[in-house]
Amino acid sequence: MSMDLLYENNRRFMPVEHLPERVLIWDETLRDGEQTPGVAFHIEEKTAIARALAEAGVSVIDAGMPIVSEDEREAIRQIIELELPCEVGVTVRSHEADLKAAGECGVQHVYMFLSVSPLHMKCKFGMQSYTELREIALRHVALAVKMGFTPTFIAEDSTGASPEELIALFTALHGEGVQRVIICDTAVRMPAPLAFYEFCRYIIGNAPRELTFCVHCHNDLGEATANTVLAILAGATVPTVTMNGIGERAGNAALEQVVISLEKMGVRTGVHLDALFDLSRLVARCSGIPLSMHSPVVGLNAFRHESGIHAAGVLEDPRTYETILPEEVGRERELIFGKHSGRHQLAALLERHGIPHTPLMIDQLLHEIKFLKESQSHRPLEEMVETLDAYYRANFGVAEAMILDRAREMNDDDILANAA
Image 1 (cartoon, helix red, strand yellow):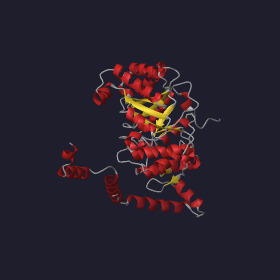
Image 2 (cartoon, rainbow, N blue to C red):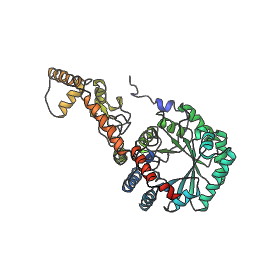
Image 3 (cartoon, helix red, strand yellow):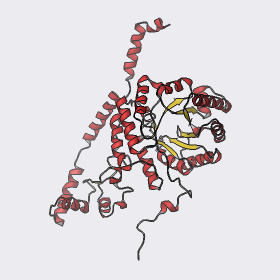
Image 4 (spheres, rainbow, N blue to C red):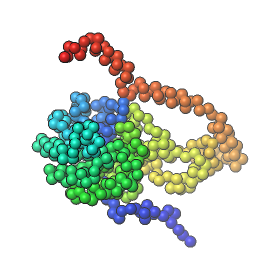
């Protein structure tokens, strides 16, 4: 009697009948990713990352915020000059000064954000009503269009807003020529991913059908990838991501995780999977943020096996314990020897190197391997953690003591009095 080795339960239990054939991957590594505390890309690093993202098949690149500094504007100009085969735009606040700064960079696309939750509206802008919010949003969108830009509207803190007011706002913006809006789970207001799915489905289902919906999720509770994928199921077609998931606080939805999840579902992303690992290492090197050992897809342990049961399984058929093959994403499988190793993986190692062996020899080697592992000290790990902590303190951000010393010097030099 024959039987399927794996049942297609993913397809059987998919909560929607129709998935999009294709989504556009929108990368935020150079903007939201750079907002990771302490990260500041040099101009040559920004251009290198932008080029690598485009070569990997990303559809949209947010190159940064022009209002930040002249160096930021120069980096954006240099990225634009690369004439990459994808959309390149910049993030702006709903301010005329931001739009003028964008104009100095030669970009066509501006991604204009404005807070839409009552909490943000009151605490950040002193706004009292959604009527006031709509007036500000429509005024600055109209200004962006007048200045020759193609605006996308980013609804910051969407999940803290009234869904009905969001639908009204998106409808009004569409009437002013906006074709694309972004639903943002900025502060992770909905800890249940299924609630976020229903939230997105309700908004997308009641907004103008011509609008393209993007989604932007943060990872404070480790749900950014799940929420992003569920938003696609709910009707969004443009996930925004960052390489390695870097970003504010706990980061953003990771490009590599979202892409693999969607591709496994049969949704094409346009991203070349075999480019992911090199792209990941480039961003890690430029950001100074080392990858977690357990990061899906790109982490050092993602395709490592030590347990004898697992190693025996993947040696027989990789599908037993791997959802994707390592070579698909530019990786190699590793069998690690330690306390949990088994005979199959040790025999496979010896055979691969042409070394004859007997069952007795295998048992003896395993005994010695396990003894060595169990007798090792964890002191090297403590030393590594101390070294890493010192590295972060030295390289991320400007030390408070330095800022305070400089402020005291300015007071001593009567800089404030002279400025007055």
